[in-house]
Length: 104
Image (cartoon, rainbow, N blue to C red; front, side, top):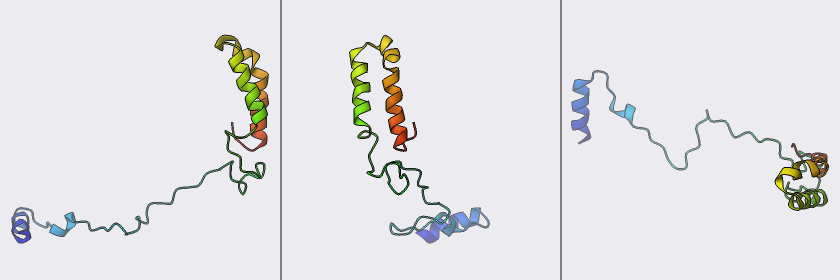
């Protein structure tokens, strides 16, 4: 059958190569060389990259004292006044996070 298809296309299309349309790949073949590996960015939880965080704390677990004080303040006041009344606590928490190498 391939010979019939090849004969039809080769007669109507000069210079047509039936194998130019076929790309053979395998599941185990490596990715093309033109694709660079993904770049590893800065990870503040990696003690090798960030000596300020030797325990490798994640942002959710870092600075629990300032985080709970900030959260309690936002729960105590409504949205219109919480921004102003909790500003100092937010700044303390941001300073604590930055001291551990987190970029905020």
